[in-house]
Amino acid sequence: MIRLFHVSDVHFGREDRAAVAWFEGLVHAEKPDAVIMTGDLTMRARTHEFAAGLAWLQGLGVPTTVEVGNHDLPYFNPIARFFRPYHRYEAVERMIEQPLDLPGIMIVPMVTTARFQWRLNWSKGRVSRRSLQQALALVESAPKDALVFIACHHPLIEPRTSATSATHRGAEAFAALAQAGAVAVLTGHVHDPFDIMHEVDGRKMRMIGAGTLSERTRDTPPSFNEIRVQEGRFEVKLRTLGPEPDVVLPKERAEPGQTGAEPE
Image (tube, rainbow, N blue to C red; front, side):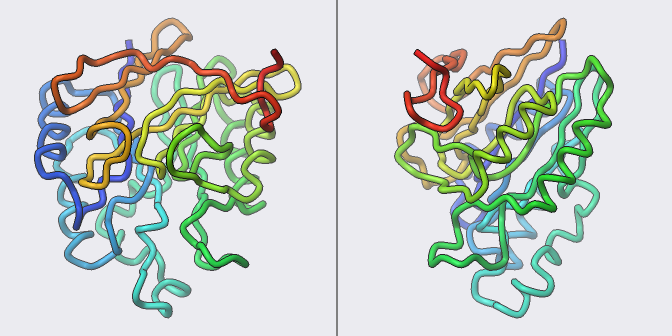
């Protein structure tokens, strides 16, 4: 069995220190095959926040891939945001948006953040045509029998959570990735976990969201997802910091009428 820890939205600068230490302890004790971090490592992309976050990532000691979230782009420095948006990630450049190739599994990164958007709220998601094509090329290069997971920050289709992603071209990207053969999209951003099955033109794909290890919780206490893969199948286990027992996330149905929803 292969075990993946899917974590998101740690928000160093507003991190929950007990939750961060709890997650790190579990990684060292249980030694998952990989960690997938789906963005918002920092709160405001400040130098000291990146220093703390990058030290934490480097200390995990397992293969790790890291997506960039909207909070990881420079907030107060527009010149850095437009011309050097990732420069504070340089210490772990080999982890940033890097595919992970594991036995029978491929993790494919896809960028959903943007330096600029033609709308007021730049925190929301956007899939550029270039990002989608790069992801599709990686999906197509995967071994025939591999389970392919897409890792990005924003949910591509709106989950039923208190926060929203409003990802431009998200549904288009979701449909294309499903047709290419991906089995799930792993995301963050909304700070609550979910596992929703969608069907697009007869092909099913799951959209799976991780919660947060920050102080900025919403409906769920600090948590992450454990993905267990065995014999070509996988399940998602929600692991929370607190008295609640770990549970298998239910595979919800999308709302009727929602793009990609399963028919009733």
